[in-house]
Length: 109
Length: 118
Image (cartoon, rainbow over all chains, first blue to last red; front, side, top):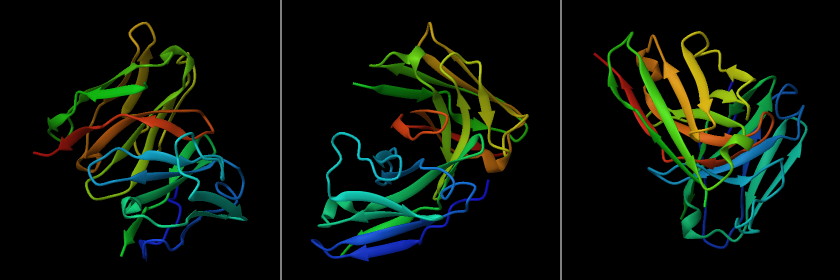
């Protein structure tokens, strides 16, 4: 149950776009379309932002989008806003368990 | 509105036991699969355990297998995590989360802190 690989940090200016990658293996990210993304502000519980690779739950702005190619999934945030500054985690199903990425700290400059 | 409220966390000595509870409201608890996910201080998220809606199917992360037991009481709209033989590395905020066997974690509680220390 090795963790998925995410960059430790990314940054962008308001209005810009950023992409966070999430790299796994054919046993998790590459093998299933069950990749999800979570946003976590300091001291708060995680919030679901993307499910099944590219679907947005009701209430999540369409500035958030997800995709996958091979063993790597990606979260793109366009039109960055100050409130997007948070930690972001990817997750994937893998053989009777779930695995998370190590998390990426997004800084809005 | 979906609400998940964890309780039962606290300070426990290494080798000790603790039972966490998660009270659910705002949805038909008995129809939903549930999970426990934890987060060590300053660290990332780690899935701990899954239980099906009926309680008949259960999975654990290797790190807790044989020490933790997940259960639920659908009549009481409650999820539990019995934690035995606790270790320092079990120190974390424990969240209960609604989520399917394959699928995402749709809703999360606010978490309860477990500290294992002498």
